[in-house]
Image (cartoon, rainbow, N blue to C red; front, side, top):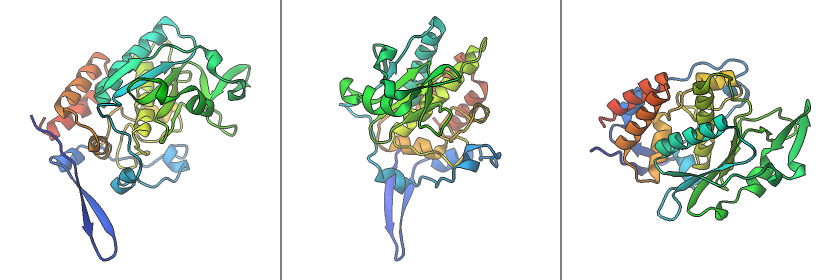
Length: 286
């Protein structure tokens, strides 16, 4: 069994300090990264001028890590769910467990009454919930035993601030909490696409909770997105850089991770992602 080890080596130069990430097979893994295409006018990268998150930037954050005391990702349902929506949540739970290689637990559902009136607005007669009160008032990691992060899932539409029409999800880098909605992700009579969209949003927001910024390196589940059309073009897998960052502060069996993700991708019929995961596995000689 081969394992990826991450070593951060600081090389002191006269003009700067540049850390170098040394990972066995890392260059091979980079070779299967798919380059980002030029953004369309409405895409996230065209409208948000973000800087790449270097490994220095990543390590400067108070990086959330899985350890013996905090090792459970809690999914917190809020609201009323149909049978199909409950099935979606259970399948998201399976994928998150494979992606992050840690225990994922469904918490006892919360009623919509936990949302304060100040955290609601009505648009065209339909209610939207503001993400801030959910992140900072409703969700508290200390309420959940062994929680490393807590992700709320709701069928209700979300918005982050008054100037925004909506948001698929949002997470706090510092408080280890996030929320995802499948209000705009649902496709009638297309369970696979609905699940794929909800998995992407949940993996992405939890990635933020694990200190990952939006990825500008390659096609990646951590790429920013402005629309469903843009999100549907993006993958569910992590690129080489984001995978290496996740590897910094945890001990996991990368061979098992890849096999778990490939198995689930095959069972959920995520064909294109399955092809790339197999390329990553082969590149790392796992």
